[in-house]
Image (cartoon, rainbow, N blue to C red; front, side):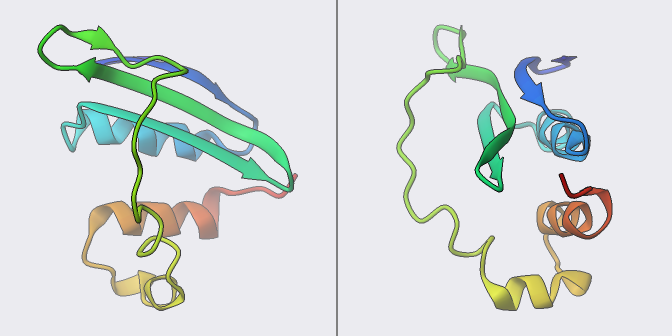
Length: 108
């Protein structure tokens, strides 16, 4: 998939297409420079996406094996209180994520 901001690579298993749509929207609407997303469901990889640039100075693309440091990235996203209040979440990203969780996911 190619967006205005570059190419998105990887795969999405059937039933998880909304994740790819939300991932692409981060580049299109939120001007994301680089990102990766990998999701496992019941022990199986169902989403593995990456895209953008890993070095904005050289324009090198983000690749499947690009290494990144992640610290405290899931605390807020996985917080039960955030999920409980998702109907009134002020951040569009969280509204999209919780909408996907409630509507788009089809159990394997």
